[in-house]
Image 1 (cartoon, rainbow, N blue to C red):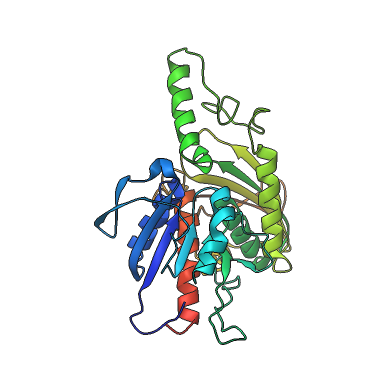
Image 2: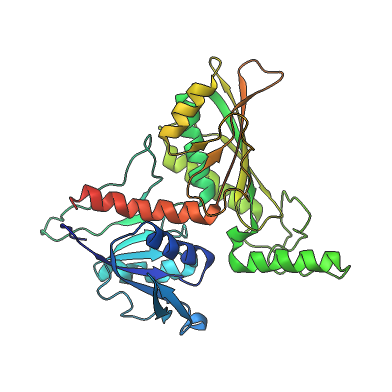
Length: 346
């Protein structure tokens, strides 16, 4: 990915018709990313769908052998299977790969990146031994991992001895199928009809779930295991790894979450605000309504309410927050590339 003054990049988005792919395209436009061309790619069922990119009409194209020709940046935002099948072709074409599916996180040459001022920035793209540009593979984790890592880094700076985090998942983490199932179940229950359960194999409407039905894959336990693994891998020795629990909530979009921690000494609201503001988190003012999954829609930042002291534990604190899950994940992926461009001298 060579750089230079006024450099523009040819971008490809695999999974362009997915919820995350659509959000990624929007974030690129909203942040005025220097894209000379944006190629939208997806499975054959979506091929030919008319859409727009950067204000111009375009079509979603099929994934083919030469789909990545000329692309300098390839985002994988659809299925893990698409990423696994096509990342080598994207890299072979000369593109830098940014994976949002989690499929490439375990690759030896993949760098997991959560962009924050207290965490590491991506490793810059460097020249290989033969003088050619070395193309990287970067993993941009899902919202649950970004939330947990950000909270862990902030709590470490506040002197937390231990912490636990409860994450309330929206059904949009399961893509359009999750959205449609919650909508269908809600309508059926209100009409006293039998509900359909092809995605969660359980009643998700008007309900909180600590586990899905037996036929649901991946299970909620599998999701929790993946989040815990990725958090531990990213934090390494940067911060203590918190305890993590996931609950499926009957909401369409946006994570809500609660965290509890015990600190070595009392934490003031001013200390709390200073630490988390440095991490790019928005803190509510005194008297503000606490953030909700509805109030954060369309916002890129994690939003937190003011800290609350525990009523029984002297140095115990509670944190409540919310974030637009799709917007956060897409923004983190785009910021990875922005950091790479800045570090490469553009």
